Amino acid sequence: MFRKVLVANRGEIAVRVQRTLREMEIATVAVYSEADRNALHVSLADEAFPLGGVTPEETYLNAEKIIGIAKECGAEAIHPGYGFLSENAGFANACGEAGIVFIGPTPRNMADLGDKVRSKILAERAGVPVVESSPVTDSQEDLNRYADTVGFPLLIKAAGGGGGRGIRMVNGAGELALGVEMARREAEGAFGDGRVFLERFVPGARHIEVQVLADRHGNTVHLKERECSIQRRRQKLIEETPSPALTPHLREQMGKAAVALARQAGYVNAGTVEFLFDPREGQFFFLEMNTRLQVEHPITEETLGMDLVSWQVRIAAGEELGFGQEEIDPRGHALECRVYAEDPYNDFLPTGGKVALWEPPSGPGIRLDSGVAEGDEVSQHYDALLAKLTAWGPNRDSALGRMERALSEFVVLGTVTNIPFLRDVVRNPRFREGEYDTGFLERDRRLFSPEVGQDVEGIAAAVAALELSKRSAQREYPAGEGREPEGQGEISPWRAVGSRTLP
Image 1 (cartoon, rainbow, N blue to C red):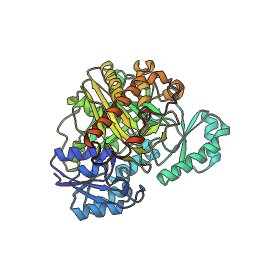
Image 2 (image 1 turned 60 degrees about the vertical axis):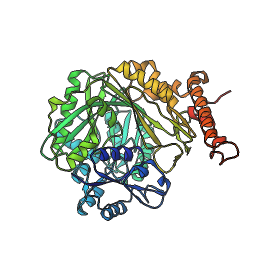
Image 3 (image 1 turned 135 degrees about the vertical axis):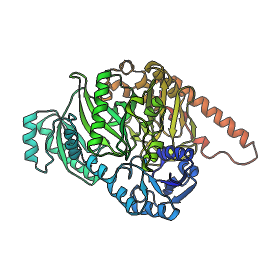
Image 4 (image 1 turned 90 degrees about the vertical axis):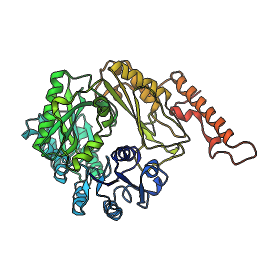
């Protein structure tokens, strides 16, 4: 087993990985940008090294600098978390050349499965159904001919990327040329690869993914599914397991398909196979495979009692899984809400500011993964994710009740968050019935125009928390002694509950 591991990431995922490494008695190394000098992941690490600069390109995407730090401090392995360099085959290959273990799949896995076209070919070879799509081409004429044959609506997709980027929906021939141009431009900027293709749009589809684990000894298992259909701008917002849409038979078929693809690709370590599910026809189709740890992995951990980061490390160190598919027996139900520093009532615009008060929920069945501490500055340079709130219960109703309660107790002052919006989605009758798909948020526009009266609980909690904070500050700095806590006089309790306009 490794003695020292460098975590090449920041925020909540860096903290999440560090905590497992500490439990495994492995020394942790953090890297940080100037903006993250005082971040939680830096203070928790055994060693921390500056990357210099603040932009992602200067810091967490600087593969050469990160590998140099790993060699300098004697780290035997690097865990990339998710995002940044986690699916970069060149980085994984460079780690190997430097004699450092990359905790994740092989460079070949990433190259094959990170390309949507190559991954579809592998899926077809494995007998996994795929959505009908065009060849990748630079010819607008070829794309026009394909669109005329298949009909609209269609999706334009980037061939070399994922995460909802480089995707455009077009409803008619008049939109196609501009849509292709925009998708190519976004894909080139995000992935350095402007190739696109067209894919048949499946109306009313649900987004369901299956977690897999595979070791270097030929053992591959799936860890059941996660439903990820609640999305804004094709970015996941709320996930749950098990999916309320699947029958036991479909669940088994999806799991077998995910394992078949992983074996076809010679996959190693943790990965996630994503599917589109058409509930009208009862059919599912392969979308892509993410060659990394997923943001939403906690809900799988909560229902299985399993630490996926630990298994990533153990597989990278050469261990066998030591269990078979028949031993995987999930219990209960779990949901995850992604808490962002963004304004859901202003097109999910990212917000910044200092986290002046951070009062997360707790109680039975509640888990919080976060890299934020009170007093932190929310930087505009990185992803706006503040925390992942997970609620587990013995059944879906129980988990929903716990999530609603936890969101009502979650108080953040100093930056606008999406907490009130998440609470409204969880309370929505159709969501509670499990009747939703990937277009749910786009259709129910009432969620984006809440009435002030709906937020009395959140405002009351914010005001109470602010008053408690002021009293605590007064005890810490009695009159005539010390100084007034920085910024206390500028904090508005309304910022804890989003950007709702008050009369």
